[in-house]
Image (cartoon, rainbow, N blue to C red; front, side):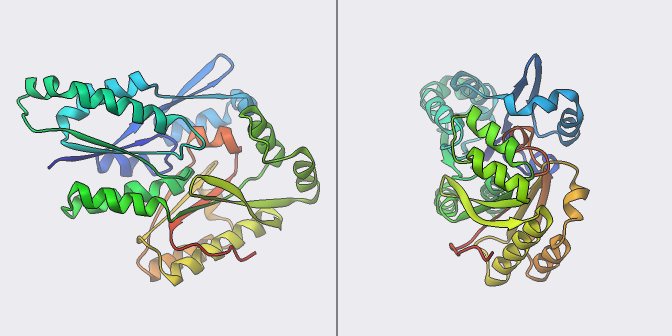
Length: 314
């Protein structure tokens, strides 16, 4: 059985990894005024766009995911011919319509694929499973990395599906934003009142940074720490402790809203990498997607992994 894998471009994994493992991308279009950029996880294009004067209005950006029809066409034009079973792993449905769009498209795909496969000389059935990763940014990448690992090990679709759905319930993403005013403005643009004006003002004045936890489709603060670098160090130390305790997959993901060398220079980063190496945990790091950056601002840092739930040690 030929198993295909699909993610949306908000999934923060290196493009080189996705291409090397045949993982297809559902792109998201970012519109800022008259400027438009299609996010195909091109790191250089993302950084160039970030540096442009257009990005200064990022809080007012509009992100446009693939529609039901676009997803349907992508699958029918190629994927139903190339594969027998496809897993489409999306950003949490509580933050984006991509899951719902893909789910709706799947019904049309399963009704229409037979003629297309028959014309290509294939008489076997095609199956598609849309999975809500229940997370964001690089934490979303835990599932596709595990899917690649299982597929390459020769596991069947039923086992892969059960494993991915289990991991989605145990994946954690921790994010530290740099600019609370930006985060509040962007949140209000999307109707999210979780970052109030007072907390943003106090946080900026006192240089207090929240540590936000993404888990099972929900996102909220688990700590408040003075200073971005001390907050990042505390987050890296917490992630390192989880690695020592034992993760559910040998994978840890990192992403950053800017040049990766800036993230690598943060306190605690080098120790986290050493801890992962000591425990045979593979680290994936990438520039945050353009979609992610317009939602949380430049300079945000995120870590993701799968493990049992544990209170964040502030």
